[in-house]
Length: 201
Length: 201
Image 1 (cartoon, rainbow over the protein chains, first blue to last red):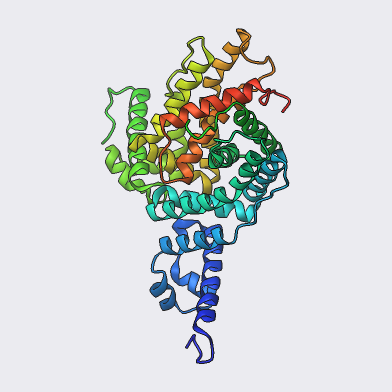
Image 2 (cartoon, rainbow over the protein chains, first blue to last red):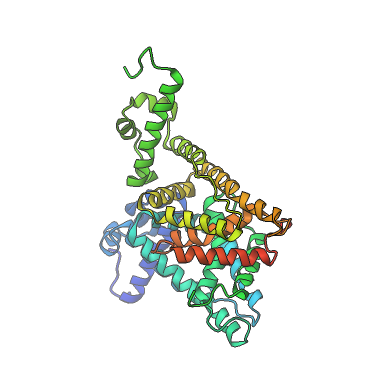
């Protein structure tokens, strides 16, 4: 029997979730979404197959729950008081994540899964929205300092910063580099200064 | 017997390739890379299963050949003599392609396949390199007119223009729009004017 009378339900539930999502992440990295196998994930997590089927049921639900956990665990955004430094830190975090063999494969698998599964796409959308909102705060700081236009669409700035790095990651054979991060920062700031990210436009 | 004595070998071969690649495209759109089935593709193309196995052998080789065909068939780049108009035409072509239900699913399937298959990634890299080179000519025109810095990395400009549109397509639940195309043009031109795309980096 997997549960014992003296285990708090919350603690037990949380531990099972952590183990299953850890196994889900490994499965995505090793086999991709198409290769996900619930019984194998249950085995790797050390929990009963029935638990995984009852609580999650499908690879889609597992992946959505993993993305929800990832959104909750994200690193706090850098806020140095200098917009260029903040954007550089964000762009370098993106590059380091995508260039990391395990993290890169995880994100590639999540994005690939989202292309053909609507619920994964919605979960990925939520995940990026959370990340973008966190990093958008450095734009609010810049507006407060008078260093960015008051009508700046902060989320659009952060998305513009990530876009060339993800585009390189997904459509070429080479991972994005620190030089790409720096160019993306310079391009984003030039567009910001030119008023391209005004909220109305 | 699929061949007849009075059919020219080149014509017959080209017709078989066209039919098989057409069926490959449909299979990718309908079932994605993971769902590709060579006997079903042969049936849909009206050719023998043995022909498909002998000539292509694997879904990877079929997809690489499809990308090669797509690269050869691409629409000539717009060259109006005005950089903004040229970039706008390119960005709108990207948006219209990604927002088109069939083309959008085809590109999503190709990009997803490239995330977990090295040969598909190399073929996708080649395809985009061809497209980017074609569209880069409008930057050469702009340099000739004195409308862009002489040391402009033209391919990088074109990639920067596409990046926000693909990023939206792949990481959110909404397809890119004409407004996104326009913002990407404005952002790219602002970065170009600021010297961000100088060849030295």
